[in-house]
Image (cartoon, rainbow, N blue to C red; front, side):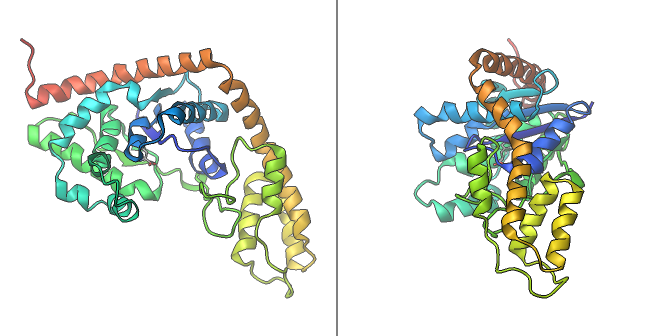
Length: 329
Ligand code: TRP
C-alpha cells in the first residue's frame, strides 16, 4: 500500500476551511493508503510557544482530528516529538542542505521580513525538518496546500541528493497529493478570500450554535441586486459557496432564484446557512468535547500511533545510518 503523510502545526483550532480542504479527505482515504498523520510540535518551536499552553494546543488538534473521523485503528496518529528518528534524520539531512538554498526559501524570506528579531537556525532549516518527517516514513504522497509546495519540492531535492551522494535508494520521492474536486476552497466571512485563522473570518469546528449564528449573521454583504440575473459580487458569491458546501442543492437553487429575480433577503440566506453549518459541525463539536475529557483514550491513541510511526521510521533510519557509514562494533 502506498504511504500518505501529513503534519499540522499545533496553533489554534481547526476551522471549516481545514475541514473541507483537507481533514475530510484525510478521513476518506484511510482505507486506501497507509496513513501517517502527525502533530508537528517541533516545527512549532521555531516561534517559541509558551510552555504552559503548548500541550493544550497539541491535545486540542488531536481531539479535533479524532472527532472529525480519523480512526487510530486505521491511521497512525502521532506527535512528532514522540518519534526521535525524525530528529536524527534531520541531523543527517542537514549535512546535505546548503545554506544558500535554505535562505532562498520563500517562507523563510517571509519570516525574516516579518520577524527580523527571531531568525533562528530552526527557522532556516524548517524545510529539512519537514523533509525528515516525510522521508523517515518513506511517504509517497503528501497532501499539502499551495503554500507548502516549495517545501515539498525541497524534500524531493534532499531525498535525491542523499540517494545520489551515497549511491543508495533509501528515500522514494514524495509527491503532492491532490484531492482534486474533493478539496474545496472555503471562503471567509469577511469577503477577504480564504477562511483563515484571522479574527472574525472563520468558523471553528468547536464553535457552538450561538457563536456560529452570530458570525454568519455578521458576514459581509452588499445592498442587494437591482438588475435581474446579474453576476454576484465576491462577498455574495462567498456566501453561496459556503451554502453549496453545507446545504442541499434545493436550498442553493432556492436562493439562486431569489438572487436572480432580485427578491433575495440576505437575512434569510444567512439564517439558512448558519443552520446548515451547525448541522455539519455540531456533531463534531460534541465529539471534540467528549474526546477532550477522555485523557486515557488520548494517551492510548498517541501511544499506539507513536509505536506504529517508530516501527516504520526505525527501518528507514537504519538504512540511512548504514548509508552514511555508521557501523556496529
Ligand atoms: N509545514 C507544514 C505547515 O506549516 C506542517 C508540516 C510539518 C508538514 N511537517 C510536515 C506538512 C510534513 C506535511 C508533511 O503546514
